[in-house]
Length: 294
Image 1 (cartoon, helix red, strand yellow):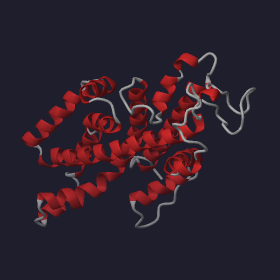
Image 2 (cartoon, rainbow, N blue to C red; image 1 turned 135 degrees about the vertical axis):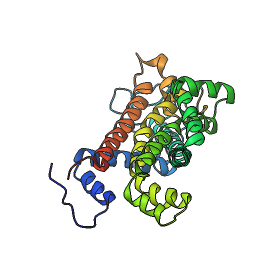
Image 3 (cartoon, rainbow, N blue to C red; image 1 turned 120 degrees about the vertical axis):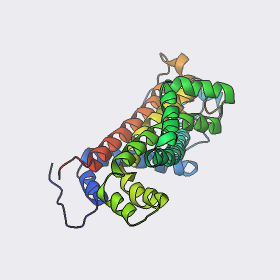
Image 4 (tube, rainbow, N blue to C red; image 1 turned 180 degrees about the horizontal axis):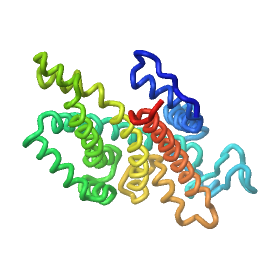
């Protein structure tokens, strides 16, 4: 790997971005993620068929390259004769929407509470840390299943159920970074000049701890997508006929021997997206880790 030249006055973000651009595998994974995002946004334009249009005459029709298939339905049809490619494209909307919204909300809540815990300390820190420790004691999926059982299925409830526990990760990261940053010289200098606690938190500490928080958010997005698919697989997530990758995998369980494509292709889509996000997040973590020497 070629070294990243360190120029005078370059910010840590610029140096991290330069290191990330050198990682070809991460760049390729980023292109895969971008492709999924583009397909999700442009689903009404690129999907060849209505994802909910059933045609029992095409029930379990194989992909176009197999005997009995046709290229008008290149990935075949499911048990109700619905086009799998169209449902995969629309299903990407659900997975990406849940991942982005959950991570955005959880990061906002986690950063605010983590800043308070790390900056104020005392009773505030003990209270927030206590709640975090309690929530970390519950397995994530079991916790989400319990909440969904109480709130009922649906997209909005999936997002809320995941946010209820997801905020603890950015909170812990923010608290730890804040505890380290508040002892640094530039923060002490701001206090010596009479800056208020809020000024120190928002102007001095927050801008300098965002990089690790954003990297953690990217790492966690893959986990959130898997959890959404798991809830939909169990029938607790997005409800039919809305296309969701998890429910598509569940719909094809009984056809695994004779019509493998019904479950396997949504599973491959989940694998590709989650793997690509993990590769990108790992590269971001390596690129923005301040311990990496240029």
